[in-house]
Length: 139
Picture 1 (cartoon, rainbow, N blue to C red):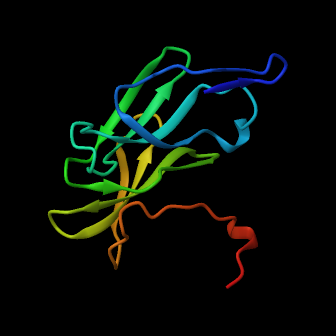
Picture 2: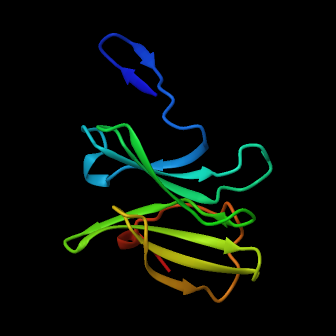
């Protein structure tokens, strides 16, 4: 959805046949023109009670998507985009139902392939999400 403030018009454009949630763009580009949007997808929209189990990298210039599926029956949390001088990474926690464990996946933000996967000590409930400013975190 786009809101054009001078004309007060709202336009929408459907970019995928998947249910989409938690879209994110580069923090440096919020409010500016950007190219890539990342989001969680629901791979199987025929089963509306299924969880989000895929991530997407949508290219606004080419109107194409790269999709990384984590398998039916699994559930992922909100993808978080992390950028630094070494590159861009997408982090997401995936609950794997077949082993009843949560794994954090660090993905290359361009290819959506795993760079690192770590098992978490406890299960993180599917749909748990949020962002924090760690520089201001008080413990």
